[in-house]
Image (cartoon, rainbow, N blue to C red; front, side, top):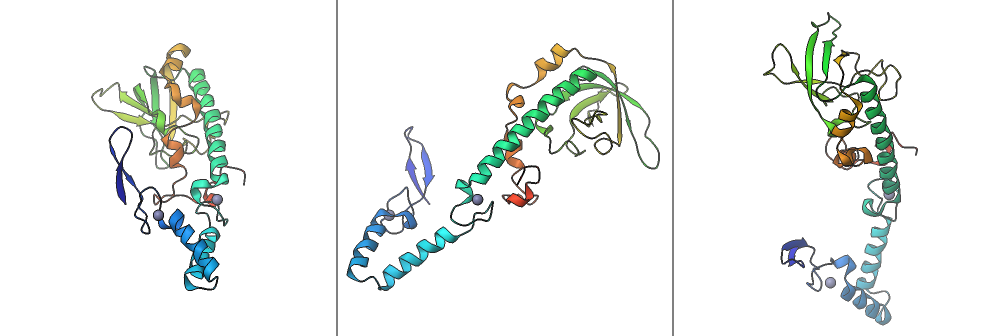
Length: 238
Ligand SMILES: [Zn+2]
Ligand SMILES: [Zn+2]
């Protein structure tokens, strides 16, 4: 790794060639190395240097893509990865439009008064009335609608307003934003004091409805933080 200065005079990391010591390319892309190969090939096409250069070049092009496992390209240039990201963003965009509609229908937004009851197999917890104080927009993707640890809403209990609590996405009987059976079956949510459509729509962050965001990139990383492979991207048509 080497450093060069960019147009603003800032130091940026860059690759340095171990062949010609120029920065900006590595040995495998070195124009001087390539010239050397072409000259050597004219002199002796069977020389060790020529054979070695060709073998390395062939290996590079054979190496499988870390995403789709096909040979001949890398994850960075993978057309499947590009189109899968586009499809994922489109799916998230549609889902988020549905969520806003869902919130509008319920009158659920910041300032709403909500009755919450967490249900347990061994007996329901007592009902609790809370005031919705925030929406965790980044947590709201079509992928983690079932994850209770990624709470959709922030709230404060009316009886203990100093305490902050989390409320999951309510179950959707229409099955559009989540399926009523599995999503929030541990949670009963009833809106007692509604918020207006205008207020709900005004609270939606501008970029959120595009479906884009770092939370989409997170979907392409596996549980160990490694770049995911295509077979793990189960929500796109393959
Ligand atoms: Zn070079
Ligand atoms: Zn690929």
